[in-house]
Image 1 (tube, rainbow, N blue to C red):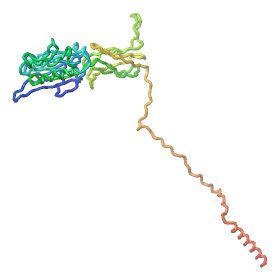
Image 2 (image 1 turned 60 degrees about the vertical axis):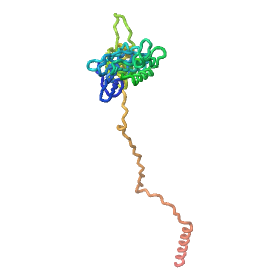
Image 3 (image 1 turned 90 degrees about the vertical axis):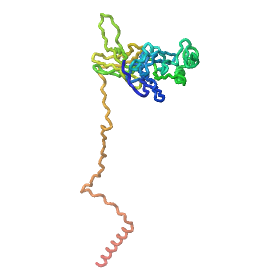
Image 4 (image 1 turned 90 degrees about the horizontal axis):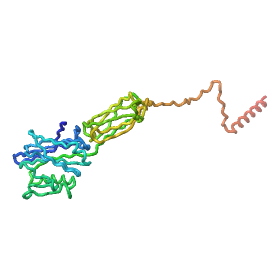
Length: 353
């Protein structure tokens, strides 16, 4: 059994709570509890049906009658006595058979210490299903119904039990922890297509405890049983994997595949529990060759193309070419005056001659 991680605060799955009373200078017995669901190293507070739960801790004072452990949950009450070892440690296990048929939901574990008078002042009566306070009246008095008709619901019953042990006329003390039970599950992560000869890993998650075993089978969808005289065309793999620590209340598993002996086909994957009734399945494809893909250039690899506009320079005028002369824009009377002056000059020359 794994050594539980110790902590001074409540965490997921591994819970240590202490209850110590100090009166003047006299120290009375202290009680601590460590609850480890399954063998999980991560301390998940959720277990699957069929996984064990370990309850360990320290109880000083060497009580002769040991400790009383109460397990309260949906339609479930289990009360047991646990001896305290010489080194003040104690240990109690809920076996797989104890958790196999537990209904889904939250469960409270309460460890009760008899304290100074050496006897449990709050006890359970199997014949009536009642919880008795032995300090009330001559032979004790029933304080609430725990089982049978008229019993309190699990959360109310747990609260009533803690109030009873905390009452002023009772010197007992206790420590508590809780865990959740859910049906076992095993999921397979998406696999995708792979090529013949490729090596890859099939993985998934589960709420089974660390150390539990899972059977993983990978086989061709076209595989069918044949007679012993026929050639067997099996293509696939099979093996047992162990559940490993995960996070966020989920543990992990993985199975390595070498597809060098696989033929192109659709393949089935089935994962199932060895001792727990749990299974999951999916499919993926093995192809001859994965299609090649052209990588898309990143932003830093994109080259910006700049286009230079065509030249608009004018063609020069050839030296032998004379630009056309523009017509005069002088007024008409300017031209007529010049003509009259020329005629007068000619007549004058004739007279002189």
